[in-house]
Length: 350
Image 1 (cartoon, one colour):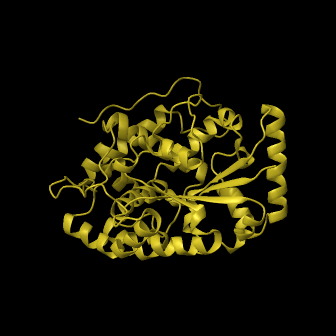
Image 2 (cartoon, helix red, strand yellow; image 1 turned 30 degrees about the vertical axis):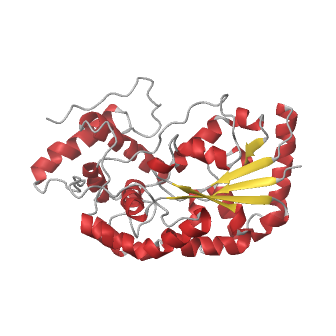
Image 3 (cartoon, rainbow, N blue to C red; image 1 turned 90 degrees about the horizontal axis):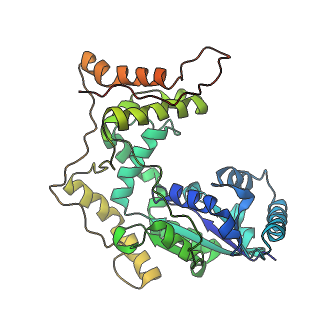
């Protein structure tokens, strides 16, 4: 019988997309070691929303998982002892009472990845502008965004973990400090170890996914009404903007996400210092939760800036974007078939 439920709750911007894609891509090797994804999904945001809202009863949820375990055993010939759920939005919830009953049916193990708050805020800002799922944050400047950081209650790790501990116990929570120095073989491999997966020889290699756009393109998108566009069309627009950013602007490598000036960075970190130290002592028996050094004071900051001159703005952004929409055949009359030719690339900006 299915025994263990691993629940990956986030945090955002800690390789969650890469982890989820790796687990989905390796569903076969996972099942041969007794693990499977709930409902076979890459990410379980819809499933968890149904559970938290009460639209899916706990009894039906547990029954479904046991049925899936039986089906996987029949297919792969291996007893399925563990199921996993991964949804980074879980960490945003202030109360887990709705899923507290999970521990009556499973040995629940929580996996929570923690990114140092200054770096997380910078990355979370880029992500909110890129995807624009929250209208309250979608068009803020970075300074305005920082003024709202009190809303991100889950970044106060000590307080948030104490709430989770109250439901599932500290002994059932594994933390993943998201730092290069603490993840020598990468976050995906570290995550798999926390799930008890030791032999990954039959697994495909993990990939880096969901990278950030350049600061220049982020600022351009901030001024677009992406949050007012239906999701399917929004994805097409974002796809074109990503292609322009990479292939027209030449932003091919990983882009800088450093936005905080040194003094401001240290001031923000001081707000979280006491809580971080408490987490470090409670979970690792040490003083420092994060060990990677702060960016050097002379580290160049990403520039969130687009041309103020309308002609220059048209030439550098609007024209390449519209051109890319046309080249990718995304401007269509109703009823026209999808193109079969590969997409082309707009001209490079000189």
